[in-house]
Image 1 (tube, helix red, strand yellow):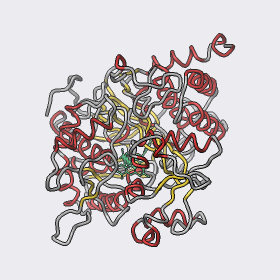
Image 2 (cartoon, rainbow, N blue to C red; image 1 turned 180 degrees about the vertical axis):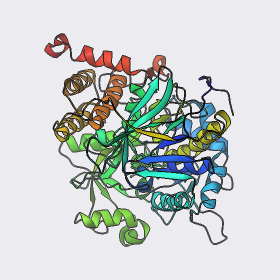
Image 3 (cartoon, protein in one colour; image 1 turned 135 degrees about the horizontal axis):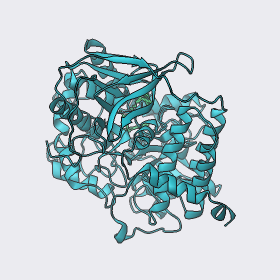
Image 4 (cartoon, rainbow, N blue to C red; image 1 turned 90 degrees about the horizontal axis):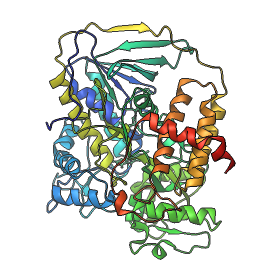
Length: 534
Ligand SMILES: Cc1cc2nc3c(=O)[nH]c(=O)nc-3n(C[C@H](O)[C@H](O)[C@H](O)COP(=O)(O)OP(=O)(O)OC[C@H]3O[C@@H](n4cnc5c(N)ncnc54)[C@H](O)[C@@H]3O)c2cc1C
């Protein structure tokens, strides 16, 4: 394992490993740590409330004839718009085959061809067929079903379902435990779990936005908890908006997978006019940010945006894309005969808690993997199907690092009540979340500018001044980090588009790291009377 910029300190006699999150990253890490005892805390039952279970594409792995790790790296770098850490991308792509074999061992039945070899599909911006899938668009559900079963079979993994982590406990640079709340109980049912190692695997931030493909649990709580404890956050401004969420007023919005466009579906306005070719030579298969902006503009201009699958997929829709078909039918749309209304939706967070190549954060005793982490592998824009890959690669590395760093000998688990915690204010948190999500979509969404971002930070600051429960506090903190980073990056790059700085700036082609103190300062400045008056 490569050396870490965050040197280890020694810990003794406290507790074991606690993983926050029951998605792919959390469960894979738990399985890799076995037989070492480990506790998984998950707000929802494991496998639910997780983006992982909803993944429709699959996992990218350069394992096909004629494909190479170098080509996978080149595609990843091209998608990442100048900010991919090449070393990280290369090591991630190199470990893909091994991790896919792990998943096969855990029981995932990836699609195979007639010869029995793994069947590989192609997705946008991949130069080769390299996506392993399950039954068309069922990869996420199948992977999670297999991992949940494997976890349930593993006696050393204790699962605390229905517990929401809300705060990390730290003494200076050392994370010493966390506070979690039993969702099923009253607000006073909180426990403090002292632990030697915390692994954040709590997923993304999509639900900070009004329109998102993510489950409601994806509110950036892990990101906020880490930042509040003092961890460094990286590239927070980079949010990927999926251009083709099914726009039928459902929250979360169902996703019309990119594979539909790969199969020839076109994007048209309400008059049936195809408009993507005006924007990019690759038309519907242009990079996601370009398609998302075009769809966004078509919608706000009133021209409307639809995914027309009638000619390309037609009557094969139900068997080829069963998940999308079911979502459309439930909304009263028959995609065999009608165009699907679409909207861009917050989909994936490239930024997150800064980690090194072993998944260590800038705090001792705190690791992060999966979407909550920022490894540098995605840069400013994620290549399709690289996120499940990153989740398993880094979950395995975190487990390996913990094994190496913390000898497994003292197992005196202590779970105590969280005495002395501030009482939770009986505030209308639902209303605050509604305002926050609308603000993020309007000002920190597909198209941003200084005035909007400043207004967003001021609004977040005002909301933060009111008393809120921990979930809302964390959501506000996560939103503040994204908006402050977006304000600071005065250029357009990858998933971050500023209408006041519409071009990339070569001087700014560097990753950005931020502490919560810096984001707080930006929010305070935005909310100052001077700014509000201007
Ligand atoms: C619709 C959709 C389709 C996608 N398709 C693909 C694809 O084909 N290929 C690809 O590579 N990527 C895809 N992605 C992205 C990918 O699914 C995610 O990036 C990845 O699954 C993240 O895994 P994770 O384990 O980090 O987070 P998740 O799977 O989201 O799991 C997070 C877990 O943390 C829990 N949690 C959150 N906060 C707390 C808290 N405070 N306390 C306790 N528990 C908490 C959640 O309940 C959940 O169990 C897709 C995403 C979506 C939404």
